[in-house]
Length: 248
Image 1 (cartoon, rainbow, N blue to C red):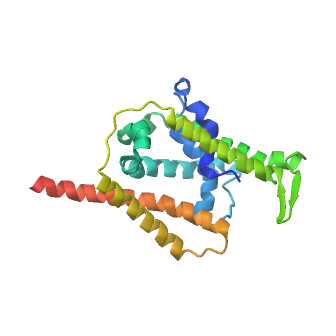
Image 2 (cartoon, one colour):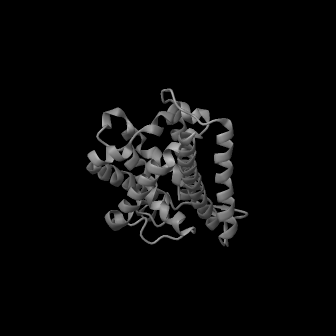
Image 3 (spheres, helix red, strand yellow):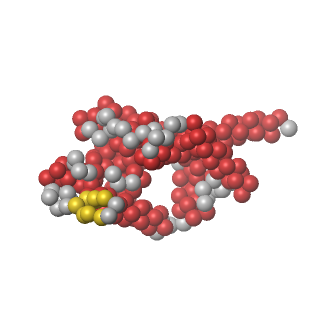
């Protein structure tokens, strides 16, 4: 399959100001939602994540939950502790009240999430042997013999489209206008990322990993939990620290 975090690249044209009625959060998180089932299971196994019929009862709720978790818990600590390159271009989003936006534009969020989910399923249909276009296209099923085995054209298409997607995302961020931003100190950044790495290492160490595919799914979920854990710690620390400073 194409790399999960390359999928938002396909909806970047819809993140333009001319499509301001759409929710960027809904489209971006929606575009990775079908693959989240792999990471939640911590193995390359899926049941409902890639079913069109499961969009409303399975994929949309997951997209909503991850969107809320990101904006309420993860976003601010993550942006405050990100590299300067990211902060200059996205740091201003740290203090945006997304929940207020959602309460006023929830229908736009739902429509945008569906667009994101469908974009993922359509992309996958071109790069999977069992996909709609993979099954019907003899070209995509063209195989190449090597001394170590056989590969198919759709597998090369997966790799190429993943790399192009990551490049498109990098260029999209790079070309964004830089704005004033708040940042954590270098010491705080080190603590944040060190705690994140500890959580990742702990989860990967504890989870059984019989093959490389399971390692990838486990590592990505561990990374998500690592960032989430560090964000929760940061919020708890800030509340305790602020209470102490108010007393003195």
